[in-house]
Length: 364
Ligand code: NAD
Ligand code: GLY
Image (cartoon, rainbow, N blue to C red; front, side):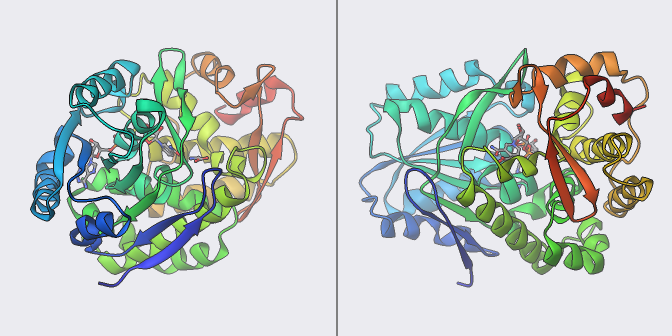
């Protein structure tokens, strides 16, 4: 079985990411290799959609290897990324007399990964966690770096923990069943990596972005894209796990993107789409601050268009509606968030040196 490995450093030790098409069939064996005896319980945490597409087969292959599989499915959607959902999952695992050595596998997109990770981090003060991400966002971003958590009515991801997994197993072939709009949305995060400084990815996208956004799923092109992004994220979180410096660059497009999602009530816009529009807003703010020229916004817009992503802010989203969410961003300090702004495509800067009123230019 062909796969490539990436190492990640974390406060609880190094862990491996494996990336390869069709590696999912190897996972039961890898659990045994990691030292989990087949007599152990394994929690397969997912959601109803992924369970039907992939989880049942996955569960059967774990059971065939001898594991006693406990399934738990969250309801599907960001609106269920709540403490109530986490509580239900904890209730289920505790009712099964979960033990500290029993692992949790999170099989799904970023929502399942964030909640499954949070459950693993607080259940019995921490049980082994393995991510098996099934969306683009999950594979290039959320499964790597240990951020877990849930949303709160005050804002997104406001409750959570840093809890590194013991392994991340990424099989790009899961993406074949992802709806086209979701796949394209994930390209928002992919483009982000290129624009914050991944030159190899930037070159790769120049030749392959239309293939990635096309209707036909090209397994090899996706595998390469995911490997480049996952390697980039691994390098960044290994250097700055707690987000005191370079990890903040990953928030390029996210300050306005998260605010847009919040202002729209997490309905009608996907995360990567919001990140794309957030990168445009960041370019506009950078221009207002004299950090970049007008061409940067146009270059970003061109990438979004090639990825078939929205490149214009939805009408009817006023700055007043966004402001509350910009202020409650969890990275804000003294009510001010560190902005990640483009200098030119492939280079960003972080700044807290701005008048809050300049944020209005992001969507003006
Ligand atoms: P998601 O988890 O909601 O998944 C998107 C949709 O795809 C869902 O309906 C899901 O059921 C479905 N799906 C998943 N895998 C599928 C497959 N293989 N085939 C068909 N359908 C499938 O959304 P997402 O974009 O993966 O993740 C967004 C979430 O990730 C947000 O909550 C965001 O805050 C979080 N996130 C976390 C981090 C982090 O570092 N922890 C980073 C980025 C994003
Ligand atoms: N998605 C941003 C981060 O993991 O830091």
